[in-house]
Image 1 (cartoon, helix red, strand yellow):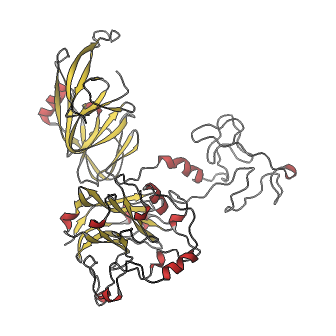
Image 2 (tube, rainbow, N blue to C red):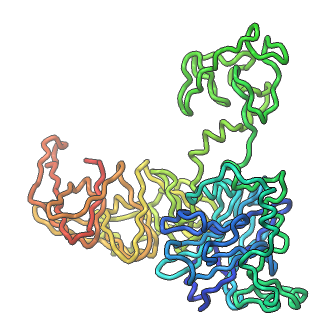
Image 3 (tube, rainbow, N blue to C red):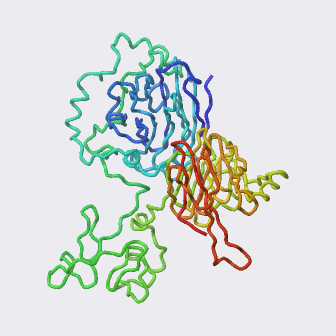
Length: 563
């Protein structure tokens, strides 16, 4: 019986099936839409370091044929054969993706799925619908990834841009020129591909083949590793249609490009607009046929234009600057009076650097001060500092997380009390606090010590407790910190960009500047105590230095900040 996965679920392949010769079927469809379904073979850095492992309609197999694209069969829109024990050691992840060929968005698709079939039996299926996405034009559906053993993860992460943008995201290069289709047709017509079985073997389906879904397919099942019967939708045989990957990358939905600036000829694909004031139709602008000098370059986004310089398209003129002739103050170029301004290419280009990061990880930094956690991945709750939520999407529940009576006593006594909220559900939560820099630290059975005031959020699976640092000459007789251990992620906040240093016998750090250190490090109080004479009245202004010792591999994290 097949296991039904939800987005974010993961499992070892050995827990699903004992076989390594697998059939992967993908189903995705939408009214009037055409899809390119591909497989990216990525290295340990999740990059396409060898483009021969980009398996798609123009390259249907990897060099050693451990990854093969089989075409539509057994009710699947596209299918692949994956032989895990033949995949080279340099490939650590297989990412199965789908992208819209042409106009369209992932919100328009109907119910789809990715499934794994082993020995003629379906062992796992992950289903998705278009209601889970919005304007994305590509989708990372599921991954095979190597983490001591091969595992499968249901990703279900939308991606802005088409196949070319997805290729660049994985470190590949988009070909600007492609061979003429007339040169490709003879190569495709010279017999069956090398991975097709002989005609006599067509009666018996291989062990990894997909089970038949209708009795009509039982008398003559298609061989699982045969070429697609009619791959017209996936091969650029028509001269008037070019593959998506050969076009330049275009991220986000298509928008209307702005008109060319005055004094410059329009781009060839654009239709010439009406002549400007005082210009004879059909004649180049400028008195007497003379072309005026080029207009000064527009100011960068976020800066006011200089005197005599035209503002960007859609940008308001600065104080004291006159708008172009015929344009009312506050009116965008080309906008009729009383008409709402339209979002042009200039606006899309200006906002592009600030779009949401589309990676499929559980914790994803959006910038240095904003962190996103996908609660749908990992299947566990997140504990975050109260009031740190700035935005959430989906069905998310927030509840108070108390430390209990004993925990409150310990927190008040040690200064390591954390006011936490528990985040559960299926959605994405964006976290931030006072513009602090945020850093995701993933623990895999190891530990780290962090002061409670430097913790923003962490996975509930992590074990945390107050740790005591003994010392003399300190108010209260000791210092305290929080220690996190287990498997999960803790989000640490700092003032500015920190630095990570190895622990040596001569490593000293100010207690106000230290952020975190490895839990295996030995921490002692240094005898060097500084007196601050400029402290406020009634306070000695004492501060202490911590000395760190430990075996090679231990570290400390220090922020560029002093109290």
